[in-house]
Image (cartoon, rainbow, N blue to C red):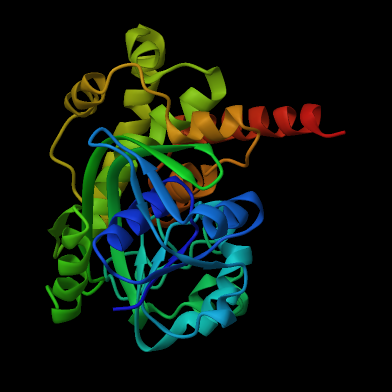
Length: 331
């Protein structure tokens, strides 16, 4: 099986490195210092069980790699609209594209049914209406949905530090437990990943989003770790209000969540004083995944007639904070 990681950051580097260490030939599309490090050292992972290293063929030009069996799409959501057109050389008729990304993906409502059937999310895929967006570059027939449950960071280009978790949920957008899902699952499990096959991948994606919807942007806005956010009565109440809005939207679109916000955040508390991925991006001066995590919820709420005042406030404040931070760091 030929596996290419498109976006060799923390998550892509961890998954790619684990697969390659099991003996599967892997390649990576990367750029800049990450590309140089991969070409010099291969995959490198720092983990509790000891360091992991494995070879990789890395390039900034996907046309050098040719058609793949699996493309693991592990970019930050905000970078995908610009990058998606370059993925086409990797796609053959049977290529599977596993979306290992945070937030609502561009394909979420394609063939899903319900009140938002066919909704093209401008917050996620701004070129979709003109037929030039992500959906045009990566047709739905290639897609396998993914939900990542692992924590990793990149202390230096090309080096991944694994903190916790090896969980990955994958599933077909059409809810089938297909042969190709089982094939990919075997490859991922051989790399030591804890893979669950889902026939309700939309609900799994929505549930993961529900947990990230508030902690991530509030942490980027305030600089606080998750424990401090949940320790503040007023901030916690605001987070719960936004989560209840998203929960009502989930009920409307066919992605119900049985937990209460209080129950969900008990799980978050168990993770301790961690920095969200969005806070790490904010501290590094990188763009934030706001649209896929928060903007999409606002857009879907408007489509089903569900008000989102808390989500709107969270989006506006975090977006403004990021804009000011960026302007101050620009020369």
